[in-house]
Image (cartoon, rainbow, N blue to C red; front, top):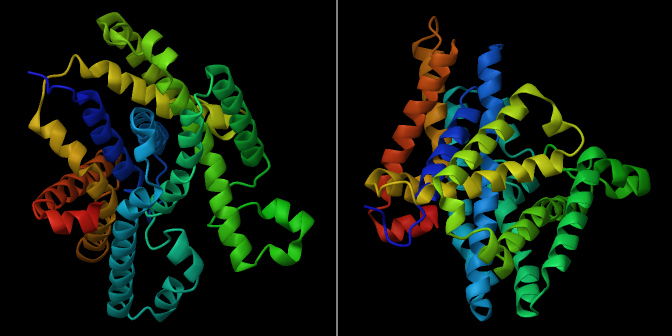
Length: 367
């Protein structure tokens, strides 16, 4: 029996995307030459685009339903405590690790770049997503204004096209966020003296993230637009034939990145955003065909916690591999890497589920 009003396909895809994130981080510290693994990594690149697409889609939907209830402060404050707490956890973890190893050089490196540590989530590889999402949340002010003014669909399409052009130019010119810097070629050519300024650096990264989020925002607004909802996101999208077609399209688009370099060449912006929204639409279409499941609801509910915590378990198993199994590699094969990722995923899911039973703790740790 299906949960009334619940999009079970979204629950499923949150779990898939979250598992993909763990896979993406499971080969840290080793060189993997397996062609199969590299293809799996390419396919798993759908995770962040899906999470961004889903976040903007549901945020815009809420604004469209109640534009006067939009609260920027409430949205930021939902993400800020988990960001600060988990950043502190990873910093303390690294400090303890390097002290135990007597590696003072690495210990110094933890605090070498305080700007990226504080503002860009450099405490752990996955933490950048929270300041990215908080930055993108500011674009919802624009969505709120456009929805209140009853923006026309053709205007939204024009803004979407413009946002793709700007994002594509940023990607192709090398001005996107790289190593917690943004617009470096542009700044070095115009004002080299300001390129290393902390304030300019913070502003430039946030600006680059806003330009990254705008195509997601306008695409979400188009999908949520009343005309598109009535014509495209009706019951027809959940028909079995349409669901099969969308699923094939989803697989084809993500396999395209496996066999081609389009994702890093021209039209990379369109490809990236397409991966996110095709995944989202497939998830919505699948929802009517799925039966309610506590397992699906649990992995969906815990997905943010898994995202935040999984690197603790990845690092833990890396330590076991390096110290206790020095002659045996847990990650020597593709199956070993998948097993490594699976155990890390399941453990972080279990721990998140247990911690979430305390509502106050869950609010602080997971938003």
